[in-house]
Structure formats: structure tokens, C-alpha cells
Length: 134
Image 1 (cartoon, rainbow, N blue to C red):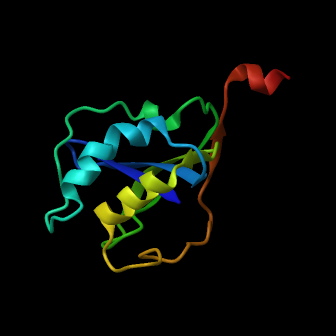
Image 2: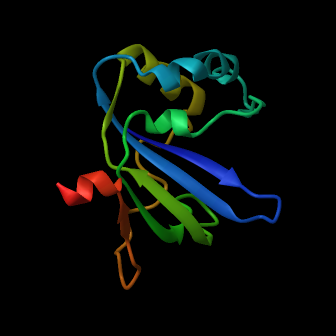
């Protein structure tokens, strides 16, 4: 599973944090979202104000990430989106996965858009300086 956390500035600039998950232990960050997921599961209007949430919680203990400028994965597939992808794969419980499916199920079993070629875009990797020296 891949979680995308979409952020938009007051100026309309977009950024997405992407985190990959595999089935395993429950995830502490997703646990904080569970009440909101349960609230929107049976509603057509699938938005719920959550207030401020620190996106660093989704990163967990991971300190290595990738960054590039790409586009949205859903229409209108706008360009100029800053993507940050956490390298470490996290775990999600089956219960949490079911809550996510119920909250966002839109009859699409695949991505809204196929994977795109890298083309000439630069992809940067960031990691702590201590990891580089060893």
C-alpha cells in the first residue's frame, strides 16, 4: 500500500509525502487517523477537518527520503508537485488497511494513473550526514 498525504499552500503550491506500507504490526501514525477514517467511511462527502497534524509522524524513525518534482496521480494530473518519498517501508495492520479501504473506496482497484517514466527529472536522495561518512 502507498499512502499519499497531499498538502497545498495558501498560494496553491502542492506537495505530497508518500509512504509505502506492508502488512504487519499496526502503525502508530495511522492509529491517530482511525477515528477520522471511521467517521468518513459511510459518507459521500469524504472530507473531515482534522486540525493540525505533524506530517513527520508519518515518517516515523526513517531518516532517508527521495524528492523530485512531478505531478498529481489523479485528474487533473497537475505538474509542479514536490514529491517526498520515505525510503523505509512501514507496516500496517489488516484492521487499519480495512479502515483505509472503507474510507477511500471509490470503485477503483488500481491507480488512477499508470506509473510515469522518469524522463529527465532529477531525483534526489536525502540522508543524515552520519550515514554518508560510514
